[in-house]
Length: 251
Image (tube, one colour):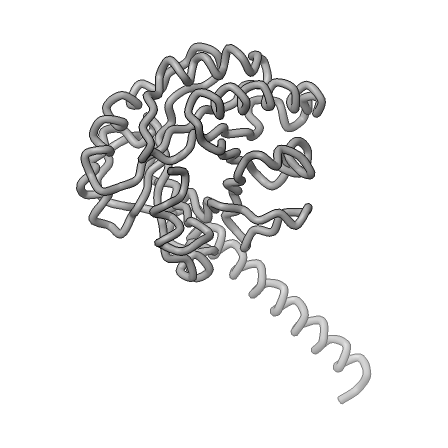
């Protein structure tokens, strides 16, 4: 084969390989968007305890049916900012607690509201019981906040106020739910008095300050039976420790 033919064959092979990779990538992306392929599913199977987190987007939930799909806990959206209350929270809080699921409530943190008024909103809305999972504060980006980043010192101040108020009221170690980017910007190297619930839907999470996470949201594309909301998918999470440790956690 002449040098020209070898070069031509190599280019043809390279183009074929590139096309194959692109087709594969597009296919995987489509399967992921449809909830058919969950990248972290095999990693999550290493953990004994799984559970869900839900909001009004899941609509009416049949909690016994959720319970019977190997779920052991549920975090329910309760509040957001200083005044918003999730429209399905009261129903979910009452009905989920009738099952064997361990139940907790979460608050979506607002960068525009004070930590004090946000804590007061949550406390007004969520009753306390020794068997409940600890309260969660969800710290992530919304709207244009990822482009127009809130100042770290401001976030730290208001988040600390809220954590202190919730911890004092509920007598539990507060959980911070967050994304990798929000963790890097606002949580890293701080808030050691709180446990971490990290979101990572593509890889096994590793926190940059070598801290251990307690809960991991490994997918937002699971499909379970038992809900009828406009959101067809549901978030699923794992607990980092053993079943025995989970049963004692937060009590």
